[in-house]
Image 1: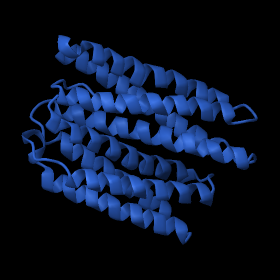
Image 2: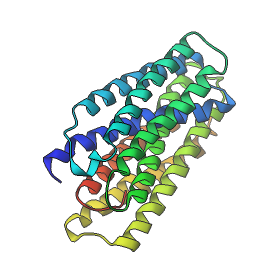
Image 3: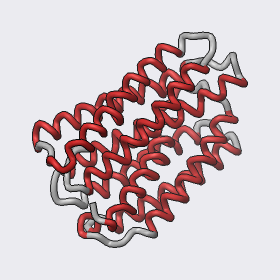
Image 4: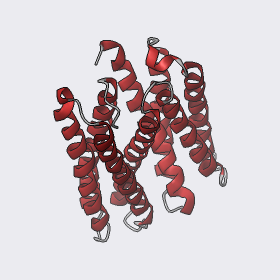
Length: 257
């Protein structure tokens, strides 16, 4: 992987984190159940992530594998920042149903920006795009879930349903990632030079957090959410490592994400 590609790995991470988190919150809030304090905290966190993403975008050096959709990508990233501000304002002012719609649309714009980067490549663009989408959903849902777990420590009567929805989204995204990795390995093979990284990405970034997510879902039946929150901490670290590893593999010349 050339040094020029490193800023793109950073760009993917912040895009997946902020865009995926906003989308996960929007999907979870479709049926409600969280507190305004949680949504406000997440809105500020997402806005910070969006600002870092924009700064990452402005620092990207032009490279052939990304130039084709640069203008579209840049517009979508700035659009995501605007929607992140709108989501914060909607939650702050407690506008009915507006935060939900803004979160879903904003998350969709974030994922569209990730897809636009994938479509700029010359090979396996569909696989790369699907990989970025599932990575964003996984990273966003585990981040939102881990942080939501802390609210149960101060709000014991809070329904476990929102957390369970986030964990189910995480399980679905990780399962889809596993299928994509397996499909890519079978279809395109693996370069011997990155075989160890491929295995590490699959077992540490997919299989391990998938097992953790299942355990976390089972733990939501307990009276206390401390075990679930602790498991999601571990899952977050693994998913982060998997997201960075997947982006690195792409820029090492392998199509599997």
